[in-house]
Image 1: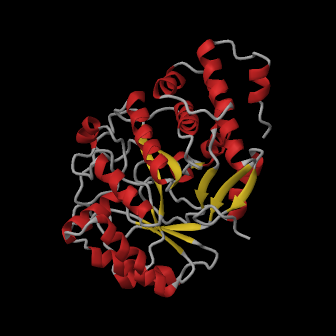
Image 2 (image 1 turned 90 degrees about the horizontal axis):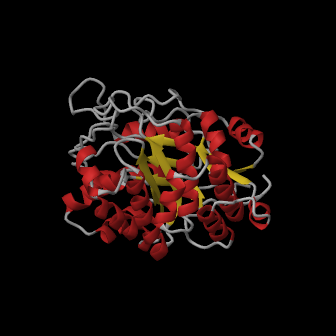
Length: 372
């Protein structure tokens, strides 16, 4: 897609003084402030946001948009946390609750298509979960499939088992990496504001603990992603605070690969009285994320959550990654009312979404290196 921001700035097509100042900052790769991010959220038109975010995306990844051949593995939906937004959690012993055995996990890995190069493992934090169990899951997968990248266990899951084992994060990561862990996902971040967190996920890992675990993962030599749950009871200031904390940690570690905004979906949970935000708000949020998180290499639109058409639209608002094939292997968002109830796309479908939007599809590995 043609980068038109330089033309707009040079020809004074941006007349508003504040918007022109922000555009000039973006053009010169200068970091915007939290106050400027708030302005973009509250006053900037969607067209300007698309222009700014697309300029940054083009500078970072050119015309490329990435995808991956991947599956999810959800070992359990039984969880010690009772997050109000969650439509996935079940109590132990209730209908629909599950906990996969190592043999069941092994069977799933034996059945994998050889083209799959990443497995994303996360689910509930089971009350009986142990670090030994997590290590055994990773070892089981690694012993069956030597090449697959194992991205496993959210900060909430890791904090629980590290605390139970009474070991520090560094030692926990040493053991998991030794077993074959390649990276950790960005789940469980929700929104970092402590007051909001007490209202929507009081049992979950604190914002400080989430950041500390990712800091430790990066220092242990593995990368991670970061997420933000938006569109519930938070406001723009909370979103900016969340992204500022991520940006500050990324300045220190450079260990985050991608930022993934996750939209609150209101079905089958205790926050169902809240109305979901619009697609226009989704696009605004992607754009501001891309502009503010200048030190994040990638912004991902998770298509099973957003839907295929909306994910395609997001590519014009700074997004350069639409995740992957998924192979109908996750229930987390479908249970919450996501448009994609059986999420699966083949490679050709993913490529078509990207090319129809005017971009070049690039199949990637987990570290964003291209698949030959």
